[in-house]
Image 1: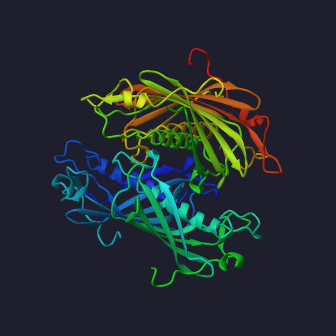
Image 2: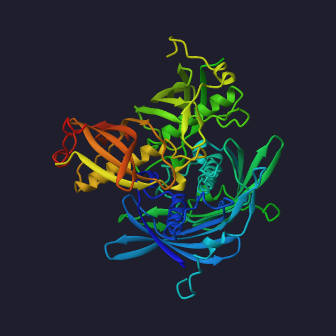
Image 3: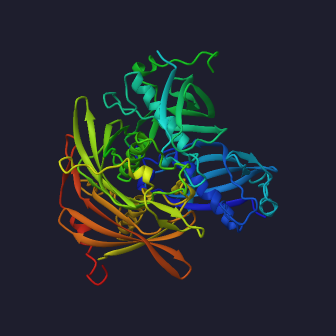
Amino acid sequence: MAYEFKAQRRVEFSDTDMAGIMHYSNFFRFMETAEHGFYRSLGFSVVDSTLNPRVGWPRVHAECDYRKPLRFEDLVEIQLLVTEKRSKALSFQFRFYKVNGESAEEVARGALTIVCVSHTPDGSMKAVPIPQEIADKIEVAPAGVL
Amino acid sequence: MAYEFKAQRRVEFSDTDMAGIMHYSNFFRFMETAEHGFYRSLGFSVVDSTLNPRVGWPRVHAECDYRKPLRFEDLVEIQLLVTEKRSKALSFQFRFYKVNGESAEEVARGALTIVCVSHTPDGSMKAVPIPQEIADKIEVAPAGVL
Amino acid sequence: MAYEFKAQRRVEFSDTDMAGIMHYSNFFRFMETAEHGFYRSLGFSVVDSTLNPRVGWPRVHAECDYRKPLRFEDLVEIQLLVTEKRSKALSFQFRFYKVNGESAEEVARGALTIVCVSHTPDGSMKAVPIPQEIADKIEVAPAGVL
Amino acid sequence: MAYEFKAQRRVEFSDTDMAGIMHYSNFFRFMETAEHGFYRSLGFSVVDSTLNPRVGWPRVHAECDYRKPLRFEDLVEIQLLVTEKRSKALSFQFRFYKVNGESAEEVARGALTIVCVSHTPDGSMKAVPIPQEIADKIEVAPAGVL
């Protein structure tokens, strides 16, 4: 079981905007990078086609607090922590660290809540319990870590 | 003085992801579209080069609650409302409506807080009061609207 | 029948990069905006679910020549012209004009070749003839226009 | 001196579109990832602020031929090869390989031509010779490689 994952990304030119910093919407793309890496680290994929029925993971809430900007070629560590696990939903916290050799400074902190859904025949989505084999692998980070 | 602005966008193919819906990070790009249109409607630009000193508007907080998905070619109305005006910061609420002929259904609701900054000689950013000619044009939406 | 379509877009903040100009990859997103608007103008959608069998339109070639940069808030007209129509493929030329009141200056020129495919049971794609009801609506731009 | 660089990327969820494959515009973002990594491997950055005068590298031509799609979580190797070096311009070829354990299949091939520019006082750009310390490090790939 796991409650944490760390992904690394380098800020690319296409991640920046004319203010010379990473566009604020791209922090949400980076959160997802860490989230999907977390799933892979547990041995499954967010688009696992072997699950029956197939499930999807739409986001119902996303947020980010920005403290310092990230710039082109900055090396970023995105730390994912599981903050809540319910029968049909998961919540994560994300801490963005700008890495400089041995040191790392937190520059932003985000959060996501996602819901497990299956697709009904009419094309809409319906919340369903997280498949047991996935739920069994995920735990909530202990209080001391959060 | 104004506290509201409405922008329209059609969801493009490049806004979607493999789940067949608009990627959740793109709601934040659409918020900014409404925000910048709001400024233009007031007669200035977020990158106005005539202000002295020049100011920037980094985001310090962004969030979004997603109720229903948006799909390719959906027509979206993004309603911006000013929720708070401080000397150095502005907060906005954004309501996303999927437009269908005469009817419109709210599918998501977001928020942004931005800070007015100037750039110090060492390249860092420092919060400064919103230029008077801009602050004079913006008011907070009345309680009945929010 | 039609061989031309014009779409308009305003360059958004998220379209720019730290060089202060629209990122070169976004011209390809704008081409697709014009392409899909062209289809809508003909009464169908690139994801029309009423066609049987359902078809897709992957790109097999894309290119762009950049003459002048586009900047934030520039108003852009993207002119699509059909340059070739084959049984299973279409080619388009795209001319990007920066619009300034009555005048318009061409700043870039692109091209796309797309192929009509259906999805085989094993998940791969196979080129198929363009559905007749679509092919009948599209013609190649006359030599004097190209 | 060097004429080659290889970068690796995993296709992310936000790189895909509703067709279930990587959006065609993102191949151009991946090309730039390899290009900027190539510069870093030579000891400089595309936004090197120590050069005097400072130079920029706008793209004047970009193209891509797509053979097979890339999908979410595919591991991609982007091979950059220098195909031409002129006093004020560089051309690159990019080969996209989908990596599967030991094997790698080419799925797309792209090209970029970039020009070295300095910014004139009126804000426009003017082609200038590539700084000697950069030009000295870059060579053209031998015929047998291309």
